[in-house]
Length: 183
Image 1: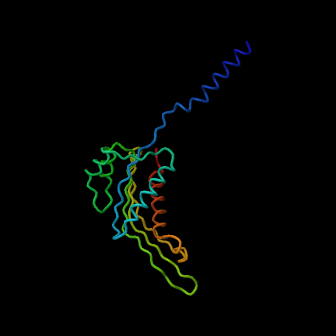
Image 2: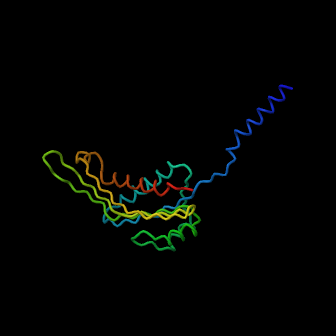
Image 3: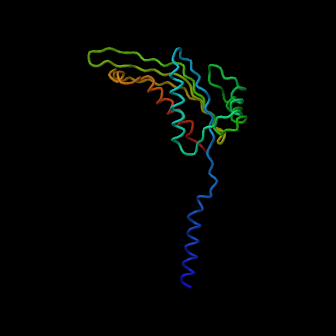
């Protein structure tokens, strides 16, 4: 009798531990619109944009980037120019493209200027733009102005491109903010 009771207890415990596996948690689908690049003669910003945005989405659990013909047709129907689309356009893209979150980023200015001094030369990096997102799960629309300015020692510019590195940081921050409220 003890063995039967122990076996029954073990079966119940195994079922209780496996119940969370049957939950219907589904990944939120994300549409990333192409970068609206208003900076002349700098094609590298688009590459950095996609690299950082996709890496940030992949590092967040519960999100899946979608790219298909239906979504492409929805984006083309909105006809995005050189400015980020408004709330109505993002809602239309989310509905027609069958996605949960739509993100668009516009870059207007990416400049670096060197300041010479007797102590240490510095580089002032100025990034201006706009980021918009629409979350169909919550109905939330976000419209954020990007105004990122940083002053760093010029010594760092000998090893890597600091202005593009800062642009990558801005992209990561904006994608994280857009994905912050899933439900």
